[in-house]
Amino acid sequence: MYFSFSKETDLEIDRVLNVSPMAIWRCWSEPDLLQKWFCPKPALAEEARINPTPGGEFYTRLRSPNGNIVETSGCVLAASPARLMVISDRLSPGFHPRRSGFLTTVIMLSAEVVGTRYIARALHTTPDQKKKHEDMGFHDGWGRAITQLGELAQQLDRG
Image 1 (spheres, rainbow, N blue to C red):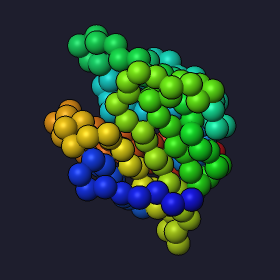
Image 2 (cartoon, rainbow, N blue to C red; image 1 turned 120 degrees about the vertical axis):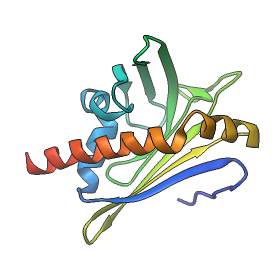
Image 3 (cartoon, rainbow, N blue to C red; image 1 turned 90 degrees about the vertical axis):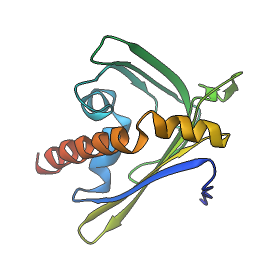
């Protein structure tokens, strides 16, 4: 699969994590594991529902430290174990269109000598949406969550 990248509308984090691609996949595809790392602490992922197949549901309910709740419901667009997860809040499960949405997330995994190359992309419709996401703390927040993901995946690899 080919995924283009637009500097005007897309954000990206590219890291190599010292874990297996399958451990990362499990952290993205198993709700109980996703809840442990998905948002930067001290925020909490209170609930997750994931059907990691194209057309499947991807739902999270997050609680910020000040008590604000953010619910996001979307659709899995593509899923390939230990390789790829693409989700979007622009569609509901079953590929049903929504009137609005904020982003499409693309997670690409590839085996490296020392672990897994983890590329996370946030695709937005407009430059303004990209800027809003940057101003919300995309790099810091997603970066800290990816660190938490790596720590949890290491436990799975050892376990």
